[in-house]
Length: 327
Image (cartoon, rainbow, N blue to C red; front, top):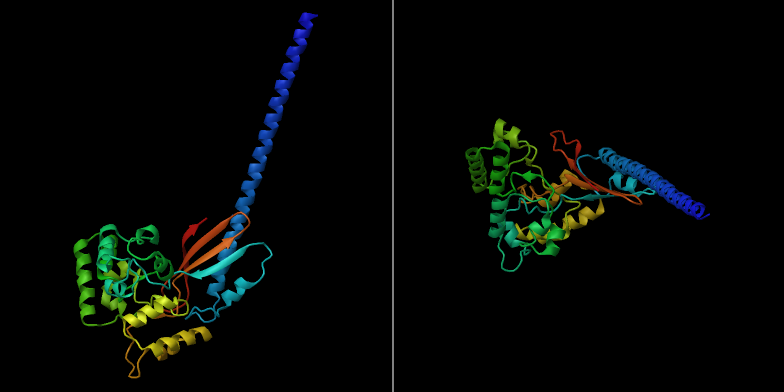
């Protein structure tokens, strides 16, 4: 009887162990299946997010006035429509601000955004020593007040030949060519044009650069107006008009006009050029196109961010390339 009891206890123990093992295995399988379903759901939502972002690019391409990007464009009404998939999609101009990667020290010093005790020369030397920076924080925060850095500056944008610091242009050339002597010759060429107070427009850029430099640098270096006048922050506009000594009434006229409707090239010319037809020093800054857009698509569990760049083209037609994706 004692042996039978011991056997019974042993069998019971084995059964309990097997039951626990079975339940554990079943739980593992269930957990694995749940994880697989969740992974499949996440993959499906990611595909939906990418489709929503791609549809936003298509809406940008469908703009009936491709010469200008403005708050009145159809893409904004497209984004405002109610969606049946539960996603939210936002579009933001992220290039129509000043670039700490390219701003010249005279303008930077005059904006009143530097931290106490800091100089534009120090920021210029920082760029020269460490290169260009995609992360504004913390890289440029030691030099520029945090509030102004977020509101007035951006890491996204091209390098306008008329606006970009000449030493930044040298560094860009050197990075792309690997030839420091050629890069220095290019810097001197740019410096000479600035001493003559000449502005290089898009039509003259290929001749100015020459075939080799044009192939090397374009479109990263171009002559397109850097900021879209429809979206540039008020504080940036005010700083530019003040630095270049432009009349306050012209600033007020521009601010009022851009609130009313989409501006055209002739509108912009009438607002900025003087009565004698003299080109405004703000011409390289203020244009009608947005060069970098941020598209943010969000679902219940995921968020997708695309940075989309508009490629400069001679015919002015929009062409976009995705240059960054974040989740």
